[in-house]
Length: 342
Image: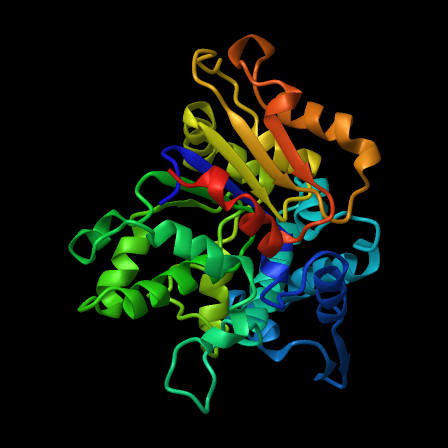
């Protein structure tokens, strides 16, 4: 069991271990999928499901065309954005860009879930091919989460931690649900799903929706794609939502922060930054993956983390921040396992 008030900040690098496209790969997919071409009224290039959503949602051809123009703008100018979230935020005052971007995200992530290591296999009765993910961080994380929990207390799984997941996918929720069914005797999938839903898992930018509404890895129609895109929020929407308050509450009460596959992008750091003063009598230790960065930025990165709190509101110093630049999430969480458990 993890130590009480441990907060996990999960970024795209964590989902990459499940073979989900992240960073430039995801951006390239969205760029290509945003290209639509028609000849004599017939679509020759583009994603049919996305076009179906547009034609069903907007009855006027002018509205459909306006959204297709927004898609074209995404395809034209997304290259130099750091992420699709940043791109949408750059056009914060353009509702058409936001709607088009959300549709593209929903399509790309839903497809990615179906093709991930966590997706159910047609030739197996198992919901997850467990050996496929045995070397990923989620297995070690779940073992630590379940440690010390007796079968009759399964509903207490995850009650003492918070997960702030900046990814749109539901990999964590899906794995934990199936792991509870597999591990705890007599617990059915519906009960396991409720246990996971009651955990404090916050998606600052939303997700594809609940697993009950949109099962992991399941095919989708134009209507379900629309529903999934409606669950995604922009950066400005997240700042103004209850999500921001929930994140701040977790950050202020945390005894341990763990960054997994997180890139420390400015807009994401802004969402994590506490506006209130943290109780300086409560110690705080920080563990972070820095894979892909060079340790020459160590001081700067530690300052970024320290600046999440008011200087007068935390007793944390650089000595309390441990960043591993040569470890991906799986090796990282194994290396720090003794420091993270109660």
